[in-house]
Amino acid sequence: MTANMPYIVWQENTASAEKTIRNDRTMSLDLPDIRLLRRIAELGRMAAVARETGLSPATVSARLKGAEESLGVRLFLRTTRSLSLTEEGRRFMAASERLVTDWESLAETVRGGEAALSGMIRITAPFDLGTQHVAPLLEAFQQEHPQVTVDLDLDDALVDLVSGGFDLAIRGGVPADSRLRVRRIGSIRPVVVAAPSYIAEHGAPQVPADLAHHRCIVRRAGDRLADEWCFARGAEHPVVRVRPALVSNNGGQTRRWALAGAGLAIKSCLDVIDDVRAGRLVKVLQGWEPSPLPLMLVSPPQRLEPARVAALRERLVACFARLEEAA
Image (cartoon, rainbow, N blue to C red; front, side):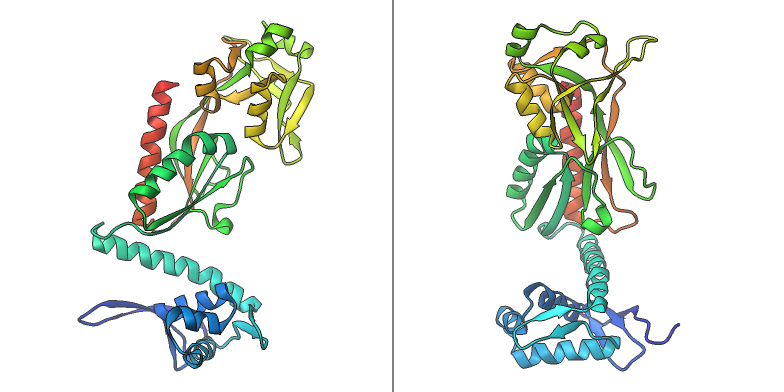
């Protein structure tokens, strides 16, 4: 093994199994040390960590110094008022997050679900879908498991699950990254909708070519306009480039404009299912809908999955199965 390269060993005694990062030098880092270092990075002051943990400032300082000596690198730049991470410190924090998460996952597995679910879950979902269907589910899930913290990121743009630290993502279509773990949980069926007030004033398009004479509400993904609307009926597969009247990168805003009677919008059926049932929006060009896209539940590659994440995963699968039946 290369000199000074940290490696993982297991120490077992009659009371517990302790996960330890050991270096070729004389000292070792155990899990409490790693958690202490991570808390120093989060709070930025050793005095604050000392108050939180009940340790003396001298003890916190000594454990930090010992960790740096063990690793053979400086993790923090020190000033009289605060601490900041070095480049080596940033790499250590990124790597140790995975280690702590995997250790907690293993502990939960060993306990066999006897302990209450706890810890952080980070999930990302498109704005409209997340607001209408995912957010209420997460609220109910957290109330059932009060020791769990759920962080919901609403973003219509694709995000990097690994660098973003996400446990789960809900996305349309199959991810390009084949390393990601995916599970189909439903379908995205695009529909063109408008408010009754818009149809009363402008009429409803009868064929896709009629869209040239209508105000259209278009979503933007980064610099790309979603202004090519695809349709299908039998052997016909027309693609119409619409002229945008209103553009937004937020799916929730395009829905609000449609509800206000500002134009026609192409939306996922799941995003407007309640609006259509209530008569707030009306489907047009029915019979011309394109083939649906798969709705996928995505998670990072090759990770031990904590019990809290597995529990939420199954709740999401059941929720979207019900929505699929009702759509």
